[in-house]
Each structure stands twice: as structure tokens, then as C-alpha cells.
Image (cartoon, rainbow, N blue to C red):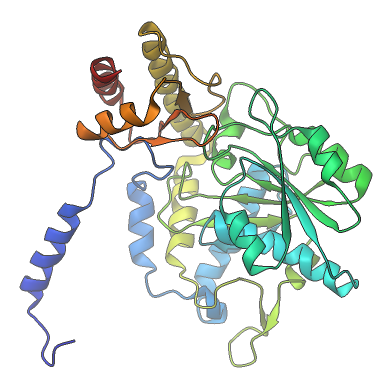
Length: 376
């Protein structure tokens, strides 16, 4: 750091130059994030100085968070759910597993494991390291959903949780949550649902899926408003059916305005909370449904166009995630990137992965299909 600061004009010029080096979302088909809604950006900027880590100083922001938990809980089958706005799915998944681990530790269990699908997000690899839990990965069925029979086979006396994914990161698939709930109920095991992506998609699909608190065995859910919820980054949410799980996460905070804190991080920005509150109140369910409907229409347009070229999806898209088969996926991905597209590939089976987020338009799909025809 220099002794004397630079001028505001010089700094603004530098910042603009750096921003121009970043990609816009215009040709990005690999990300589960998108441009935040303008009302979310407005609210975010208004609450930049709010710190929910010391929430007694910011009662207005805290009131919005409390209302948000009710709103998101109601969307996911339980308006009486308990939780807080996190930084995203990774923190939410960590906290869900930490809560049940802490409870079981109090009960005297020392060696513990959890069972997740092979398609689980890499946050569960972090969980294995951070929480010293063995993570068992169950195989998949032909539709790339977790095989419930394999889940049952992995359960032992040290299993404290099973996890289902509602909107897998790679394939956009929904695990058979009802069947997992039956296993959890029969085995008296904590069931966590990672709906980081699907939580703001599945409730608005034409097809109905049981995946949330409407199933009695579901203990916790993670969901990310900064994905299809159109909020600013970072905005996740962790919800519990039973408020006592928050007590399992709590630590004393004697020098703050609150006596305890259950969040993973200490200083916690209120800006994403305000952004999420603003956009959900502004859009309502009708607005969110319209966004999902548009993304699904464009998803069908992409799949139809690909099939017309003889290119087929690994599975028929359940939500706005498309995976396309190619003999040489890496070659196609590189050729598309050479034309300015940002795409990704799945692990197994190997495929081209495309996420149709709200920044994607019909023109985007038409341009992409034209380039795909030229590189396939």
C-alpha cells in the first residue's frame, strides 16, 4: 500500500478496466448464477453497512431475514421452518451436517458417516474434511438419480444422515426424495435435501415432485436465492424443520447484542438478505413462475434444435440443465469456447453441460445452435 492514495478518477478508471476483463453472462452457459434482478441490486446497495452477525444493531434487516425464512419455508412446504440466510449451498450443507453431527456427538457417538449420491456437490468433500465425517457415495440408477437400494445397503449403526439432491449440479436431476424419506423414516435417520439449484425451480415446474418439507422425514433443506431466485451473491438459505437444530449450532457471543450465534460465519452482511427479500416480494410466485417457464421453454428449444442435428441429451431435461452426448466432448467444448461460449462438461457419463439461466434469450439459443452445427 502506498503512503498517499490515488485519485478517485484514477481509481474508477482502473476499476472499470478490471471489470471489462470479466466475462458478461451473454454467452455463458456453464454457470448456475445470473444477473441479479435490478430491485435486488438496489436493495443490496442500500444495506451495505448492515451486519447480521450483530443483529441487535440492525433490527430492520433482522426482521426482513425472519420474514424471508417464513417465505422460503412456505415455498418449500413449511412456513414454520427455522434457519437463516447463508452465503450459499456450501455453507448450508456444512451447517446441516454440523447440526446433526453435534447432536449425535452429545449422544456419545464418535465414529459417524453420512450417505450422499455420487452426483452430490463437491461441498460434501469439504464436509468430510472439515467435520471429520466419513462420506459414503451411493451409485446411481439409469436416470442418474441416486439408487435407493444402494443407499440402504450403505447404512450402518454410525450413519447419521442421508442426503438427497433436488437439482443435481451436473445433470439437473431430482433424486427420488420420497423413497429416501421412507428410508430415513424407517431408520430414524436425519434427511437433508440439497436444493441449492432446484429449490427455486421445482415448485414452478409443470410436473410435480415431492422433495421438500411436505415429506415428514425431511429434516433440513439448503436453497440458493442467488441462483434462480434472482438475488445478489452471496445469498443461500439453510432451513430446519426442528428449531432445536439451531441450538446444536449455537455458540455464545457475550460481547455482541445477541447472546449466541448459530451461523457459520461471524460478520454476516445484511445486503444479500435485503436483496433476497426485495426480489421475492417484488416478483411473488407469479413472477418466479414466469422466469422458470421462460427458462424451460428455452431449454426445450435447445434440445429440439440439437436433436434436429442428431445430437441427443443424456437424459431428457428435468429442469433448465441440458447435457448433450458427443463422441469427443472435450473437442466440442474447446471449439465452442473458441467461438466465445463458456460451457462445461460432466464427469460420468461425459457430456456437454449447458445451464439455461434467465440471462439466456431466444437469440442466445439460436446463436449457440448455429455454432454447435458448425463444430459438431
